[in-house]
Image (cartoon, helix red, strand yellow):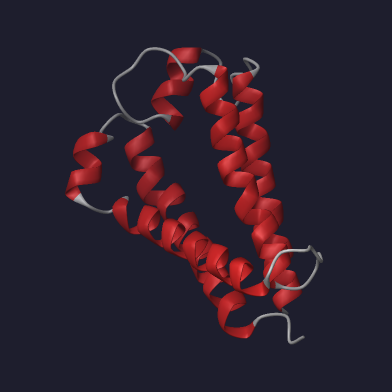
Length: 146
């Protein structure tokens, strides 16, 4: 079961990271124009997508926790101390939980009021972060059984 959770986290985060890479090279999916894309995925007042290097950095920051999930479940073996992997898993869980909770606060809404981002954030982005945090918590508490 933990392997399935870890793999699901990895697939979700890898997919999201790939979308960020695509945005970095100029793909406008899931919208047609850059302005519509900004309104959908950025959330605050700007007219252009972030520059490619920021998209790639975001992609890397999203992809790495997916690898951490695989390590927590024992699906990949690396020469990294288990305590570091656990620490990285705790950080990932806290970051996703924090981001998920933040999406429902008035301070977050004041900083990211642009529609449709604000509605999508409450409906999809923040709940997904909370689900990812719960997945990491399960991996941390139950581990691979090794």
